[in-house]
Image (cartoon, rainbow, N blue to C red; front, side, top):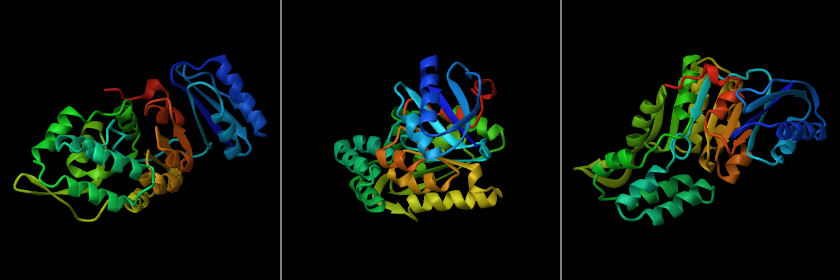
Amino acid sequence: MFIATLIAKDSLNERDITAALAGLDASGALISRQSDVIDGRALDIFFAGDAVAARQHLEAMAGEVDVAVQPENSRQKKLLISDMDSTMITVECIDELADYAGIKPQIAAITERAMQGELDFEEALRGRVALLRGLETAAIQKCLDERVKIMPGAETLVRTMARDAATTILVSGGFTRFAKPVAQAIGFESFHANVLGEDSGLLTGDLDGAIVDSTRKDELLQSAARAANLSLDQCIAVGDGANDIPMLQRAGLGVAYHAKPKAAQAADVAIRYNDLTALLYIQGIAADRWITE
């Protein structure tokens, strides 16, 4: 059995529901039941059939409605692992940091190509960091204060899952100087990111230690699941770029959040319209159970 969850950006109407039922029928699904509309925005439809075909038909619906199709078992996850930049925060930190060095357009163009999967991640990262050589490290705190904003729904998602005893991990191809305060602000249990080289109050243009790339993110997911004695089916991974694809494919539920096309195609779910609280509806957690403060 599978569950198809519809989540409307504003409100779910009868036209949306009728279109979803018709789409599932066209996919060959056998619908067993459906829930009442949840919080005016979400609906669960339970069915047997081809999950891939069901997703394809549902995503072809008109309107600002996100769709998740998943097995009925292990719906509520016990481990959340998430990318940071453009996923848990609204910006790409390296692009914003580059603005203080006067080279944002140059670095942002490279970031975009790396996110699209057009460039080798490590090579592109080291190349961008080298361009920041000589920038005062004080710019990092200024960037945090002025540019870094938490993504809507991030705190509610992470704190609600943590309340329900889920492990929460922030993994970033960015930098620890940003990941640590972001993880603390949102409520993540732990974080992993790259270390910027610093000397005498200036960035050296180098990185210290191993790189957190797509392989490392995947390894962190697997090791965290083993440490918590969880199956991968009990894990949810969230990201938006090519660097996130291995962990999105590894987790029981991979969610591409407002993502680049390659990541959206690789994931089990693509959230295009809603904020991060959509991931709670996907897990069967309605708003009356959310931690909002």
